Length: 316
Image 1 (cartoon, rainbow, N blue to C red):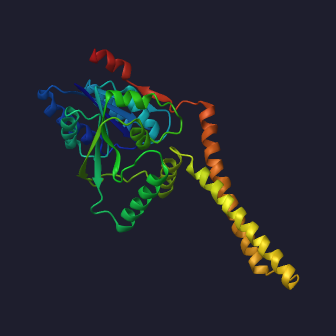
Image 2: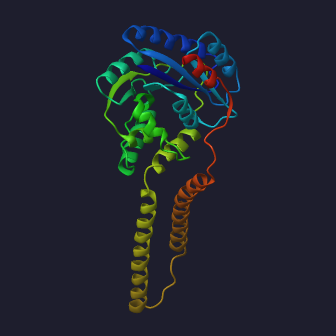
Image 3: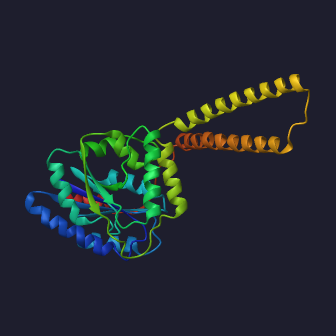
């Protein structure tokens, strides 16, 4: 069985060689068991020497296949490119910063041989800051009440996929991609095991607070239209409250005569309703923006350099 390792890379010059050495060792351990391996690296527009190092790795190891983007298109595009260029019977998706331990690949393969199409590695949150753990748990609890698929806290991109899962995911051609949700949406038999997350040894994460918030919103909006329904329901509730308040004002005026309404109350109600309207408009705008990008039909990424065709010839 051929196993493809798909690893998106962004400014990984300090660690990419050690990562490749680690997965090479795993490949050597699996070879006597009848499993061959290829390495698919996707350079997501890195600004350092990542592409140069990938070219050097490809010169010394014919199993290395690399794709380099013309600019930074984001991790979702890099994952898609990696899956498109992976030819293995099974595909292992993992980060190239060694936070996903390569030695767990063997365990994934064992579980795959038991008949599972998806083998998910669930990261333990032991050692994380309390606020981060609490925020993550609250987010997943909220999301799983809204979205049409189940997202598991601690399960990220580190997973093994069978060929039929990869083909199913590649058949989903939407522009706005949330891979974690897509993997859950296609289904197929899956299993999960827990592991201790390794500390990033070099550099810093490219995920800023803004990026994490946007990623969280993508997960919330990509697999349901319930925010739109919630906006509609909230509007109906506010309309009912306004009708009841109007009836109360008119009744009070008929019984007690006309009184001058309170200035503070009016300003508070008007400001609150304006805020609610802006939130509703923002929700509608998010969905409209996604339709806008889908209709444009632009490619998910553009390739600047690759050795895929040459590597295919060597493999054949």
